[in-house]
Length: 381
Image (cartoon, rainbow, N blue to C red):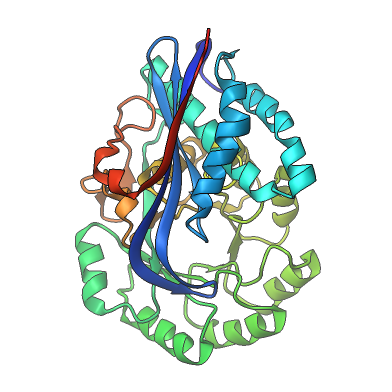
């Protein structure tokens, strides 16, 4: 499936936990005014390196906990080891972290730290090979559709014009809260878009079956590309199936699933599949889900709502699988200040560079003020 990978010996793992104040984002989860992230830099004996990102969403201070898990359990186990294929290396780390899942109930944080490590190892291998990551994964097409994500229901027209000037022609708006106010606003936003523009909705698990049914009945004539997470991942398959039967709007989800079997089961009620490389699976897991989704004639649109590292990692998986849409968070995030997507987007499409690995260099200097903890674990040999 993949290009021949070099044998690699890990000599160091550097970890950085960030928490930064940001403009408030309101959703069904509440209002958040901080952004968090853990960045991973893996080095090998040849002097090459690779970057990964660990989801640290709400609370943003969870970044510190995830760094501690990496520092105490994962990085020491990885440093000094030699690997070729990424999946077996991460599977070994997964076995070592089982006690954290069993004894502390840390399923989510463990999935996130392993996902970030998986991405870093893939970036490292691709850089060593001198190839963009999507080509190492077997892809040939570096151009993909993208959309501007995280918009409030009352986003001003002037803000959308700025995004249009940046190259976007598809937009995803928040839903699932304050329905009496937000649903009329969302319908107004849809009517104001050009016929060639696309609009999606994200309810962020804000409804139960009854309220989702009621809300989607009001939105059904809006010509929306999808409704994302109208229910929570804890809802039963029967509830998802029932909602799917009650609306014409395609149903999307996946960012809060954390097992390949969960994705396989969800293929029966989801129209749009949305795993997140920083929350579960990394490159390896999301690539597998993408291939299964495309083979099942589902729309594969990876979720991303962190820094540019996770977003562009998702783009490489999308390019390698032939999926549909790349999500790009356009909200204020100081942790993304080291890189923008400027120059990569044109007329609703993003084109990946042909540089090795993820395709860009990461400069931590601009975000140094937001670093809450950092460490490097090195091979003692």
